[in-house]
Length: 101
Picture 1 (tube, one colour):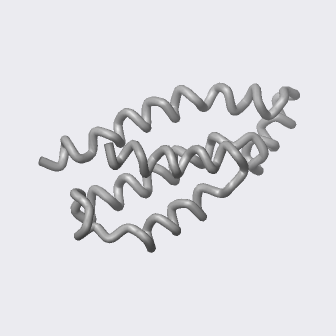
Picture 2 (cartoon, helix red, strand yellow):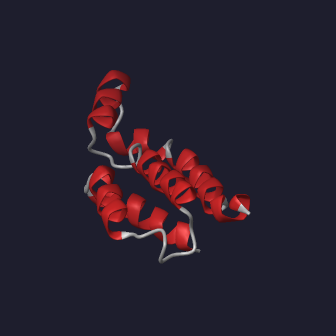
């Protein structure tokens, strides 16, 4: 559940335009692995996964704008295709604590 919380606050601000790098940096500074139920390695995997999952989601990133210009489609049409990747990554990364044991 904690992994889903971390992922959601890494991806949701990205949808609103906040860079996922900012969210991941804030989490890496604020979260102490000794105080939560994750060891440092799975926490690092979840934080890196949150960054990877949050990067293709915002519609106004450089990659989305370049791809929309090349394909002559709106950025939202390009981003809509990335939501399957995002959903699969969130499901896989929420399984990290189970795989840790």
